Length: 139
Image 1 (cartoon, helix red, strand yellow):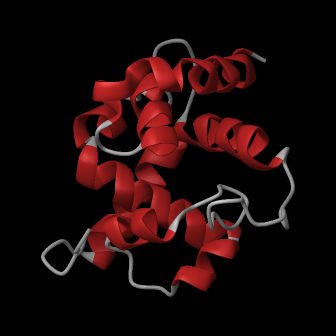
Image 2: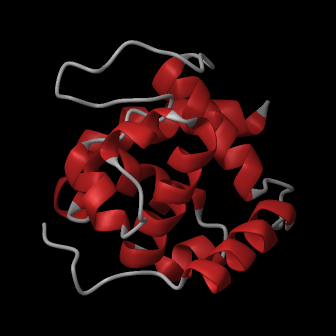
Image 3: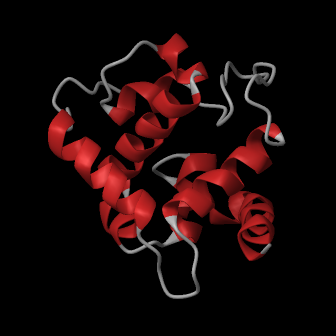
């Protein structure tokens, strides 16, 4: 997917990211908790996991189209870096499910991360993934 028209404003993007990482929602899960859960599910908490079988890289197993859609100015290889990958995830979430990100809707973001922007058309394929994320959020 071409992202030449979508570029998050870097200064505001960074401030929003910090705010979202520090705020909690009803039930107590923060964006940081959600990111930690995705990290556990995708890479068993490893900061240097092997690449996925479909070209996914880094501790969040980000694909090249995901990175491109995020609008974050970095190289795909930089998605191996934990902090850069978080920025890419937040950019991707902001693009496709901004309200879910702002309202701490972890289920929506988990399904989006796992299956892409058309996840609602194949929701049943994301059920097991969401259950894994949920277990880590509940711990």
